[in-house]
Amino acid sequence: MKIPDFSGPLKEEMTHFVKLKQLSGSDYASQAKLLLYFDRHLASRQPNDKILTLETFQSYFDTITHLSKRTFSDYYSALKQFCTWLNQREPNSYILPKCPYVDRSYSKAPYIFSPNEIKLILKNSLIFKRKEEYIPGLYQTLFSLLYSTGIRIGEALALNYGDYSEKDMLIHVRKGKFNKERYLILSNSAASQMNQYLNHYKRIIPEENAPLFLNTHKNRMTYANVCIAFGKILNKSGIKKYENGPKIYSFRHTFAIHRLLQWYKTQDDINPKLPYLSTYMGHVKITSTQVYLQATNQLLQAGCKRFHTFFLKNINEGVIL
Image (cartoon, rainbow, N blue to C red):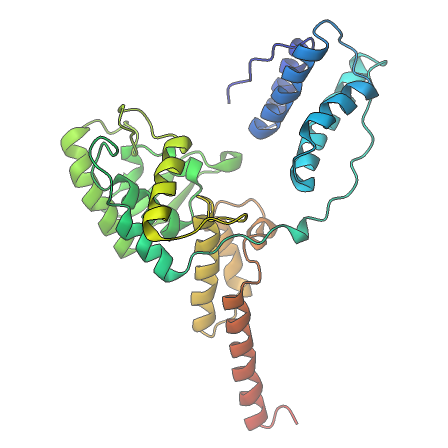
């Protein structure tokens, strides 16, 4: 990861701190970005003062009061780590106290697409003209991949043409979150969509190391490009946007929920299968996967149906009296 270009009075200290974090094996990309926001604040408010005080932090926190408690705690945690380390070099520098506990179990429920909404999105992903979509079927292929595999949008946009094996129907995610490498097996329908897209791709872009998804300038597709196209598709599909979505990341949440619903239908024990889902989604711990498995109405109905079937079966067999 490239270290941000810090420009404030503590630019050398912040650069050194980020390097130390990376040497310890941490990617530290998102935290470094949060430090960069604080660095810009320092550059504008106290460009020559290298001592951090309580007033310094208070003035900065006043500028981010609009953030949710959960997001604010992420900013706070990144600053606390840095100022604790800085205090060892400069004892007069203030150390933030421990951040108040934020209960993350009450986060806003994610938007989950219905099967009909997914069909509409994929159908209306073909609305783009050549000047908006460099390779035909690009957005339909991208959104199909996001839904059918649960791949992160950043991982999808980082793929190159050579990362897909048509023979094995495999996507090679070379550098996912936390630098985790993994393979994703595509379903028959997703592989068919990918192969159709690549037939157009190979006529235009012959290099195997070229980005899989290109914008109209023949550069790697950006997240901003995808968001603009996604908004147009939602409008075309008649899907309204709410506070909790839908967003690009809603595909990942939907993949997890729909996978769980499919497992419910098999009548098998789901718990042993969760580690497989966790690995497929590129999570370090299964607790990270559980964040995606929130109790939607569909899951509650499936759970109730399974319990009802189990209960009646045991009554009929005389197990429960």
